[in-house]
Length: 133
Image (cartoon, rainbow, N blue to C red; front, side, top):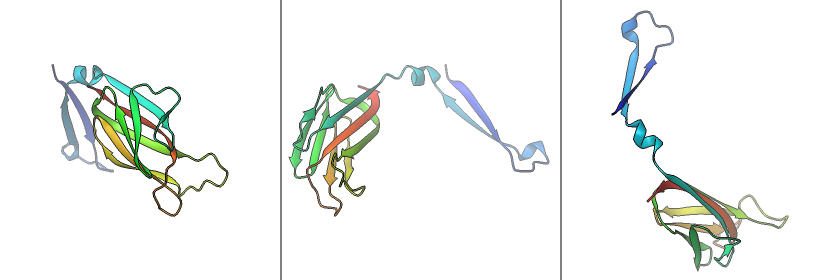
């Protein structure tokens, strides 16, 4: 059964009740609470292979600086994905980066690059969160 959620927004100096605005939304709280989710995370080497135990994904280097992370099993819906380059040397620049190119329920494609903006093979770590298929 749908639940009603109401909130009131009032002007900074209300003088009459009729100046209040009410926002009502119908939510099926049971569906929201029971939505199964999962988190998948891992480290990918500059060669595109997984570092350590790879659970729920496999990774591939497509070309210099371009990688695909495939989720197995795929997500029904990815709510968020984040990746960060691992640069273990002291000279690592904050401009060295990872760019997420595409997010699909079964895979994510990322680019890694150097501080000059050129695509370079780099190690990175990632985390994906979403609804289970």
